[in-house]
Length: 433
Image 1: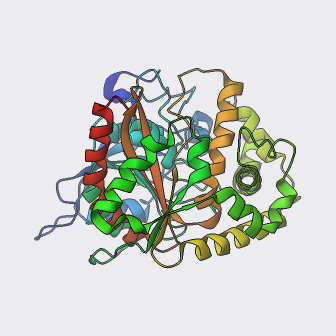
Image 2: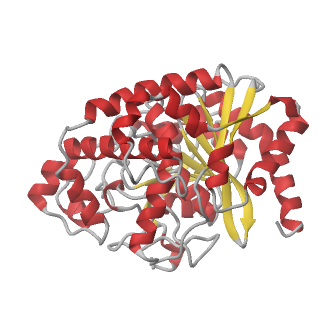
């Protein structure tokens, strides 16, 4: 368990003051923290591992994403703990301790942006920067009961940020308040303030909700009732995402194995997507960091060591098929959503697992979770995880996805829906549901 002060969320604390300004700035008076893979001038970017910190000099400049937040009036108060080399969605770190989940102290916080999510959930900051490759903003947001936004791939600067797998890395952020979530996004993506546009349709992926350990009504009803109230219920459509993906993404056949074909425990086509995504991520991770890992042979935690060395030994076999899968999936989901369409799926499949739970069971759960996370991961679409209160005293969440470049639309939509969703969640919780 991480150090008790500040929920173990911080690697180091310091204060970076906002740029002085004569007029009110969009983030004036707000505080934030950054995951320890963003460069901050004068500090070593530790990447979650002591051997990485030991073998790298202090940064000589600050990442543009961080600078843009300072220029917009926010104050940075430190760097947060993360999973080693960003290669996990669990949130446990053997070297620096596991940040304590304020929503469920005996459960993992989710990773790899664990400290950033915990800092926001514990009200230590107003918002925090993470990054999301396979799910590293969406998962901890869900596990810690806060909002988490994964922007469209490549719309926020990755300069001065250590890559994990570059064609997936997306500079996301956390907040408790949808207005702050939106404002931060507009600063990071340099978006103008525009009036919200109504969604053309909201598609509920029925099969994904049936796979969840949480009753599907508990997840979808607050969204349905809020959409009905604001836009009319005829906007809500239903789809079997797995069947649609199987039909529209023929290259997935390469990844259909006995394991992914297990109908009872997963959705075969989405499990195959997960395999394709994880293979491509291993290959890209190796390109970025294989040489350093092989040379330094860093001290890595259990589970992490096997994962990282497996990546380092990856070959380029089937990598071209992964690229075909990505192209086909992007075209398929673009066609499904059309302009201003939104796809609703569970963020994760179960509430946060217990700390130090059986590693084999945890790994199996996380692999299953990637079947949901890979939709935005492979397409580069934007996705937001919205908290839905507690079920059995544990945090649950729903996610909305929109097409690449629809970030402003999705942020406005969350701001419009959020209050109604939370009111519906309150009603469900009062009924003991």
